[in-house]
Length: 185
Image 1: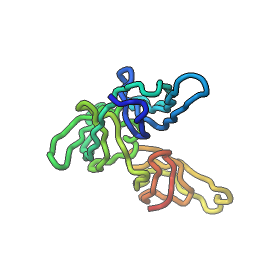
Image 2 (image 1 turned 180 degrees about the vertical axis):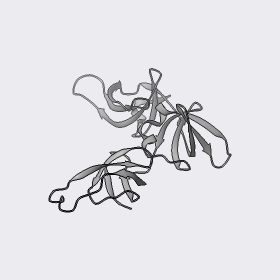
Image 3 (image 1 turned 180 degrees about the horizontal axis):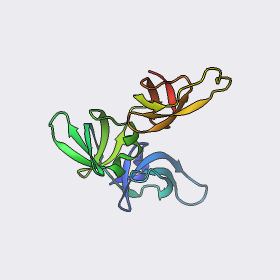
Image 4 (image 1 turned 60 degrees about the vertical axis):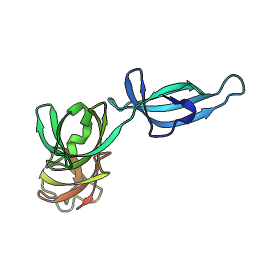
């Protein structure tokens, strides 16, 4: 248990059986009545951000999240098989826990994983990733008066918008948070 007076950004709480991470908090003392702590919490499973207000000094349950680096081996139905590079232990992770990160993972990639109570609850990717373009339409000279783009399928199967000059086989740098093209690699 932790007092609401000691909350910090990034701390993980267990509220109503749901893991929630503190995105923002503010200690507020109105002119009348007791002090309160207003928080913005991001739910681990859905990614939804909710507002919650606590009384100052109230105890809430803190969830201890273990962060590890695991290697992505392969996809097994609706699960991903991950391996700890130090102990060679393999662990299955449901696609729901991986979320949109699956669009950027290649076999052999290492990723930061958040584990709670023996189960994987979240994944942390680097801010950008270099991937190869597998399929795209050819670009046409003279179509560059504006910042025109075309769809391109990456080696993971993700489709993004790229500039007209990008060709099949080129490697591109992609922002893993937004899915946007950054540059050639």
